[in-house]
Image (cartoon, rainbow, N blue to C red; front, top):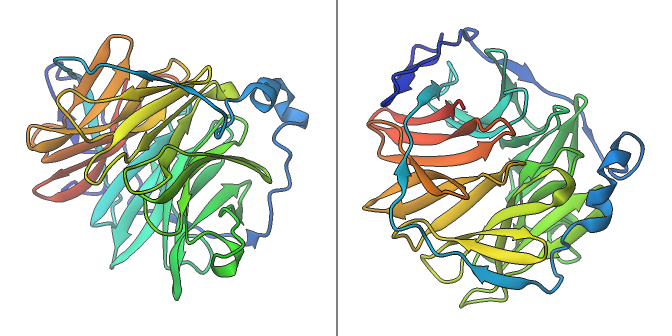
Length: 347
């Protein structure tokens, strides 16, 4: 485990490491929750994103499906990795990174899960007001943060937006769910102009899990079927302008496929030799990151026009890539004999 004062440097091949100084412990960010999102994402300062508002591939529209043959051999990444460990935590997970290099994720301390923001070497704890657990999953260039939280006595998971110091519940409404919301809402990433992607369901991810794009009060849903139900899809990343959406589908028990939606075409991503591939984010250069199972373990990956690039932290038993920024910096999670750690892989 790291000392909590600095990143532990873990390198392969290139032997290039960076050292970042961290504060001795995380600050804590708590704010009042607000009831609704007041900004119209398609007006005012966001008018330059009008292409998103008019031309987005709306989930639910008819789409063509193009299968993408997996590469026969994945390339192995060689470059500088840095571990991310919240000093007071027993497990740290990194989920999202913005263009400025700010990182969000979660950590466990004293049996409770908290969200965190890592900015300029300093950790800030994020707890949704009144929650029993909080995770931060995505951050955009404006510093808007989205994530998930749970409440004692309420089954399932809810979604939140943290913007300009205030929390807003952004759970997907339901006429039949508890408190007028679906049992589970899982926001995963937030785009440049505030569009949120994720999934929601009430039963399980093989039966009624819909991917969604949420922009203010406007919600569009997307379905890909499984062998057990009509909807088993999850949106996980979106590019500026909404031109590309990345996600994953569970077509059958024990199976997963990554997907991209671009120009009304769904393209599937299958990792080399894998029946379990999950796409977790995509950047403006159409580089997709995620994970796939093969050879008895879980590998992280980055995918571009050259094929799959495998990402395995040295001495790890599992590596998953969860976020990528426009520069190509990648964050994620790895497990080793000491437990769970976040990581950042710099371009």
